[in-house]
Image (cartoon, rainbow, N blue to C red; front, side, top):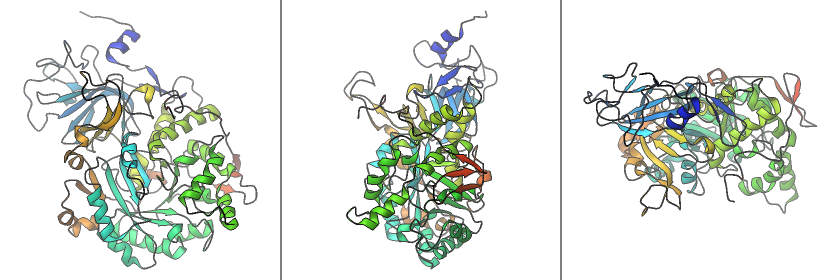
Length: 558
C-alpha cells in the first residue's frame, strides 16, 4: 500500500532527493538536486534488514559481461558534463559503466545498471560524488610528499615536469619511481631549444607534451620550435612566458604562437610571465589560460605572501637590488583583483597548482570554491535558491577543462560512461576540503583511516592513508601513464614493463576555447602599463581583497 513521508524524514533515511538543496562546506554555494534516478520505494540501502539482498535489489544470476564490479549507490553526483543529480554510479573493469538507477530488473522497473551476486555496493548515502581533480601544472622536482597530499585532496591525475628534467633516462626513472602511486601521470618534455631533436627524443620516450619556461628560455624561436614539434606529434604545449622581457613583449608572444593551440600558465602573471599585461593572452581563442592556487581568491594577504614565496621558488637573491626590483614587478594588486572576475566571467577556464613552483597541490579545489564563494558575494547571480550553474562552471576548471587541454579527456575529467572510474566522495560539510574516499580506477584507494586495532573503522586517531587500491600492484593496475602516440608506436610498453595502462593523448592540436566546458568567454582584455588596471571589453574590472574566506580555519588546526 502507498506510504507517504515528509521530505526531511526521507532525507534522513535515503539522502536528498530531487529539489533538495545542499550547502557546500561553509561556503555560500547551494547545490540543488535537479533529478533523482531512484524510484521511490526501490532505494538501494545496504546493511542489516536493508534492500540490497538476493532476490530484492540484487539479481540472483547475471551474465558476466553485464554484472557490475562496484556500484556507488545513492550519491549526489556533481559533474561538469552530466550536471547535478541523485543516482547510482556503476563500475566495471575499472571504468564507469554508467550513471542512473541500479538494481534488479526482475523486480524493478527502469534499471540502468544491474546488481548481481558479485557486485559490491559502496554506499553514497548523503555523499557527493565528483570526478577526480586533474592537476595540469605539477613540477615533480622537490618533495615527493606532494603525492600523498594530492590524494588527500582528491587529485587523481598529474600533468607535469618539463623544467628541471628532460630526456630518456630521466623520464624512464620517473616512470619507474611513480609506478606504485595511485595517480595517473603525464610527463612533459622541456622546450628549451630551437633544435627539434631533444624534444622529439623526449616525446618518443613517453612525454605527453612540452613545457616552455622562462627559466630555461621562452624566446620566440623556442615557442615556434616547440609548437612545430607538438603539431608533428599531436601533443600539448604549456608556456611560462618571458617575464623579464629579454626577447619579447606580450604581443610578440602572441605573434610567435601564431594561432596554434597552447596552454598559458599562471595567467595573472605573479607566477611568472610578461609584466604587467600577461592577462592579454586570455583574449586569444587558441590560448587556454590557467590560474595557480596562490593568487586565487584575492585576499588581504595575497599580495604580501608572494614576495617571500616567489623569492624562494625562483632563486631570488634578496641582497641584490636588481633581483628585488624584478620581483616587485611580478606582484600587482590590480591584476590579482581582476583575475577573480575573469574566472567568474568564464574567461579563465583552468585552475591548477604549480605545485612547489610556488603553488599548493592540496588546495586546487579548496581555492576554487573559495573563489566561487567570493564571486557570488561580490557579483551575485540573480538567484537566491541555488547556484548550480556557478558550481558546475567552477568544477569544470579543475576536472574536464584541463583534461581537454592536455588530450586526456577521453579517459578522465568527468563521470561519463567509458572513462576511468576516478571518483571522489565527499561529505557535504567537508566538500572541497577533505574527501571521504578516493576511488581510483574503480577500486577504493585512499581515505581517512582509523586505528587499525579498533573494532570500528573510524576510531581515533583518523589519518589519511592507503586503502587496498592504494597498495601493492593494484596502485599501478588502476592507474595510467598518459603518453604520446608516437612513443607507443616505438615500443614504449616493452621498454617500461609497466603494469599501468599506457594511454595516448589525442586531438590536442585542435583544442580552442570553444572546447572549454562552461568557460568559453574570449573577451578583449587590456592592462594599463602605468596603473596596472585591467579592463574587459572596455569596462574596468576589479574585486575586493577580502579579509576572510570559507573552507579555512574552521577545518584546519594550523
